Length: 67
Image (cartoon, rainbow, N blue to C red; front, side):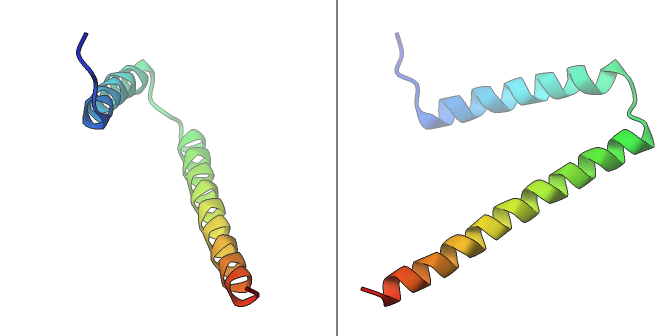
């Protein structure tokens, strides 16, 4: 059995994502409200990740200064 590398996993994930995306997109068109909800969820996730990064950065500054 072949040893898989990180890039093999990335390629397989990309292929699975494309196939899944085509299956979802051909199912039925999204309504404007669904599209808006998905966009808002995406923005909220990005904002949460940024906030976590900022909090971690600030915490790192304080912990580095107390040593």
